[in-house]
Length: 381
Image 1: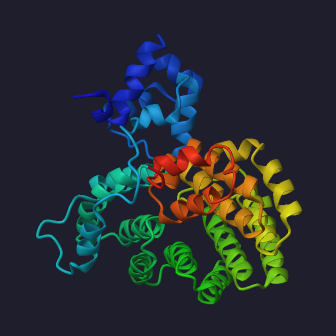
Image 2 (image 1 turned 120 degrees about the vertical axis):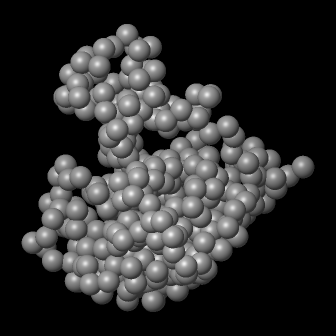
């Protein structure tokens, strides 16, 4: 078994030994129990929270990617396997022997981690089996999560309509559960925006945000804030810039009341997420000066570095598109180069990024770094 094939707990154990730490020493530095460390290393306890991965990596003095297993290379173009995901979505028969809920929960957690670290080629291979297992389970929560991951990945790969189908399945699976329905609505909005249907996305996300009750858990507040961010971006896409500003202000108010919550719904919502949305809203109304100022400020904040690689890479690709729309080729080029360093698959696997690279590379002379990216994604010979 190679290092890349090891379970994440075994990698933690290997790096702990390399750093000449006992389990107790590692536990003390993490402010956790020795039993917790032992269960992580043996795979008894799932390690499926991005914040915990980061904490472990910091103590072990390695990059989080090392604990997850370095990808062997990011090939250009969308990864093969979308047809297998489509086939899994088209299957309505459930397995004869439903999988144990605990095992399915571990698989869903692994899929989220794979997504958050932008290992899209790996995730494409995992999702068909995960969908089959989730569709045969008796857990609405895990089924909704499986559909959400699927929708998010399909949107990345330029399959917005298929992503919308998966998001709609998530809404149906959520049933009468308001928290699950709200998380599914985030995926619906993302898919509609990717399909160029900003008006529908605005209606869907705003209606769902207004149904979130303030007295519920911090996690549900975060989902409500995420829906407000989605609504703001959709409003900007509709040209309703004043409305977009109002919605980001509402989202900022929600973020200000969230401190140290457990992001169980995988939204990555917080003050930094709102500021990133403000950058994109400013650029959408043509205010390049404000967008550049906000961008340069927010990416220096500590909260920026704590966001998952996928979130940062996706924002940088969106920022590149925004800069290109206001004629700032240098800003677009810098954002694309930064995205490639943060999450290579965001640039090399997404059709949107490929189009942006081609547009920037047409400039004479092409901005620094873009020629290399053009070669990497196969746009030059």
